[in-house]
Length: 397
Image (cartoon, rainbow, N blue to C red; front, side, top):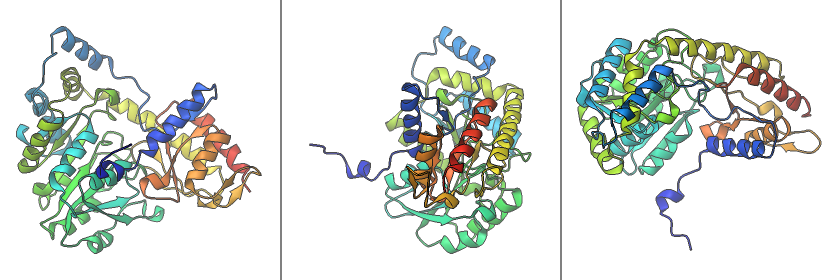
């Protein structure tokens, strides 16, 4: 007999992980699958960062780390916020956690009470709505459109705000759409939130360094909302360090203290070795990140070229991150004579089973018209994937 909590029963499994698992199962059977389901850079961690991790082992960084993270790492994060984003935080406002997902969980669990409303623009990263549910909150999803580059408008935001609104979750650059909010667009959102002092902005900026439009803009830069904005970031995407599991927040002091209290009970401090590696990444020159960013832009263009050759697909032009989010509704109701495609899940399953390309259904991200493709893989694999997708779609009538 299973006696699981209602809390767990309310959660959905990550479809990203589910599709990745299906892809791996086929690969284990000898099928040559191109996996575009997981958002993980295929680059190796820079050598100087790996050396810092080895040095930490040799210097016996094998004991519990401070609950909020090593002070020198928190100071380095403060310097990063200042130098790259012109944001002023103190080390006491920085909490280092076991990945940006953990940082996000800390924040949501610290500020959201039962029946509090959290505004989540869709398409959204799969974990946002699940964390709000876990905290007992209510997701207020705002649907955006491909015509508007999948960005929420000030009018949409204003219409969604009620006296129960506790937070706004904002991701730029965006997973899954690659959309990047400009300074003017962020200013317009900040102006709306500024009129409602009970709302906290949770700004997920984990893809900051994968940005094809120039300098990253943070909504925390605006004085009107600065004391109500939490910035979430980490080392996974910009430094190819996903497995190191280091994320961090810069937050108003009262939220930072709350996250520290929560983390002290859940996990204590993050991995000591990973923190020493993160310190090296954040205090070194960013040439590795710049070169990786160039590669992602080239890969984006490869994928867009391939998608342009498939009739019926509609998509925005991603300006950051490493995803494309095409609308595939033109293929709903079609068949290749064996498989009938009814929805986005069917499209993803069809592409996996017949085209040997793994994608993620868009309903996982709150947009059932689309599928998500990650181009965080080698150029030749992307070219192959686009060819196989084109051939698979061509069989649907």
